[in-house]
Amino acid sequence: MDDSLQARLLPLRQRIDTLDEQILELLNQRAATAQEVGKIKQEFDEDGPVLKPEREAMVIRRLQQLNKGPFTPEAIDAVWAQIISTCRGLESVLTVAYLGPQGSFSEQAALEHFGHAIKRLRCSSFDEVFRAVEAGQANVGVVPVENSTEGAVNRTLDLFLSSPLKVLGERSIKIHHNLMTRSGTLEGVTRILAHPQALAQCQGWLSRNHPELPCDAASSNGEAARLASEDPTVAAIAGTMAAHAWDLQIVASGIQDDPQNRTRFLAIGPIETLPTGNDQTSIILAVPNRAGAVYDMLAPLAANGVSMTRLESRPARTGQWEYYFYVDLIGHRNEPPVARALEELKKEVAFFKVLGSYPRQ
Ligand SMILES: O=C(O)C(=O)C[C@]1(C(=O)O)C=C[C@@H](O)C=C1
Image 1: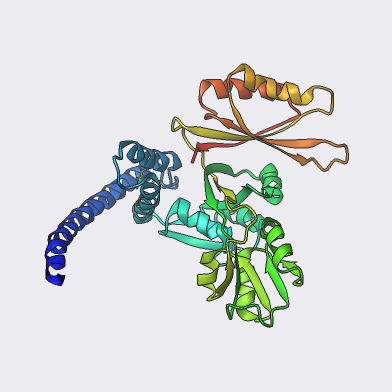
Image 2: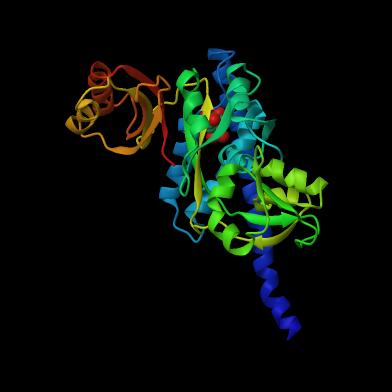
């Protein structure tokens, strides 16, 4: 019985070994070719960015279209993110800034988007992420912009207003929250710590299951986990990555009120991204405080057949009930319908800023 099992498995495992050798050979050929690409790019522009977000998106999309399975499109995305990350890292290592500490959801988004062959710059606030990239301490940053349960991440929206950085890409990740402690139980625990967004995303579960425990805000879920690792009276709400990073045990998993809870992150940096054929453009607008102004603001989009996927408003802090509108459009700013719509829009509004055009995820 055992022998016949071995006899059937052996040739298949030998075939896997041979295929792996071929994959390895091809990966090394790919890495060497990327290094050549890197040298040519450097000859043309010594200080130019190694990162080409449009090319990375197109490499992955092309393979997803060619793919006949059983490898899944998600697996292609995950595997090639790592392959490209390694190839890019052999040209020059990308420094990525995001809200830390270790194990934060921002870290997860940064690693999923840019792969593991990066230098990690963990920051203590979103302000610091923007500052680090603006000052050149990091090549790019990753910041959350909206959550499917809680809506906009207001601080990020406000920071975009005055930052010269561009949006280079987007990455939406599933946010699965867990309650965790050092011991794996709630014995001796007197309070729960988490980022305010996480507390809001779990408020139903918390009020049903632990109305007796006060909840306090931490600067990130990773930070809550770090504090729980030092203090047995603290339970943290954070992701599985944070539990591993801080050696915590999960008391309850999947405690977010919406099982489909997701957060969308944006990659930001000082570079423009070229069109890929499937892009999105993010802009900020402000309109004069008069009747019909918002209608007029949106009319050029409809007139040029440009679809809007998101409209968010933030107070302009003038005390006059004036607002900034954050708008996402389908298409790239260099493509004629979007370019025309933006030209017309500019004439209607009191404030206009393009945050960037970037590949849709
Ligand atoms: O095509 C390039 O410019 C490369 O440097 C190669 C490569 C890749 O590995 O495919 C790596 C980094 C860039 O961001 C884009 C693509």
